[in-house]
Image (cartoon, rainbow, N blue to C red):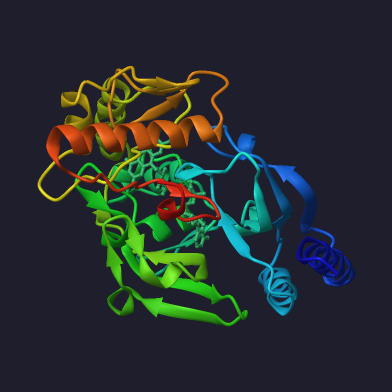
Length: 319
Ligand SMILES: Cc1cc2nc3c(=O)[nH]c(=O)nc-3n(C[C@H](O)[C@H](O)[C@H](O)COP(=O)(O)OP(=O)(O)OC[C@H]3O[C@@H](n4cnc5c(N)ncnc54)[C@H](O)[C@@H]3O)c2cc1C
């Protein structure tokens, strides 16, 4: 049998095994188009897309995929991703089921949150509960899981500033709890979550406060975002800031605001955002990333490193 035929046979077996064992609440879809599940709105289908309703079903999916050497990819809100136009030949798992959206203040003052909880909801629920310290996350359109994996940050704060411990599942299905101090966390990176799935985290609020005071701070941050970020579909900042420099400033100074490939455009509002002007493809976005890197390299001698991830691929293979 040819390699593609063997792979197809592995998927058929996987689906059969998964459908036999998974609970009724778990969603399993074939060839689900991912573009609408991302903020940039580009990209093709996942060979298989799953929303497990429980840790047991998640474990089962991982084991069945692992047994057949089928790749597994995690999808949060898809706000830091470029999905290739031809999609991904993998099992794409989303913790979109309500069971992963827990927000539970503990008697000791900490808060347990599920990895599927949207950061917007985390901020809203914390405000209602009078818990300060999460305001900087308002406006980052991701989930707790994606924010842990990326160590998302804004307004001077980083996700791991508020993390005490993370509960994760390894690809062989083992559940572990790791303390913040045991984890390797860096700018837009968490080493332990490259090869594992965040199930949830225990967060430490900064203090108790009046909801109205927390709301005021959130409003300040929201206003800053509205003034400095484009409204069109995007994946946030495309490139990491080089040490001591700003990627947006470098791109702007290289005269690239408004540069286009197809319907992908360097935003005129913030040069480190590439926006989808309507019908951009993944190839357009990647083409523009290449163009921006080449122009900044020529003008300033610097290699910009993408912050946004290429789903299921490595940037070095396309740049
Ligand atoms: C308008 C806009 C503004 C933005 N502003 C900011 C900002 O200020 N600061 C900032 O840091 N980012 C920003 N971003 C980028 C993005 O929102 C963050 O990186 C966010 O944390 C990604 O979360 P997500 O759920 O969308 O993850 P996704 O984009 O779906 O995934 C990102 C990575 O996390 C992995 N992942 C997702 N869930 C899990 C999980 N449960 N376990 C393990 N891995 C997982 C994925 O496999 C992938 O590798 C912005 C994006 C947009 C569109």
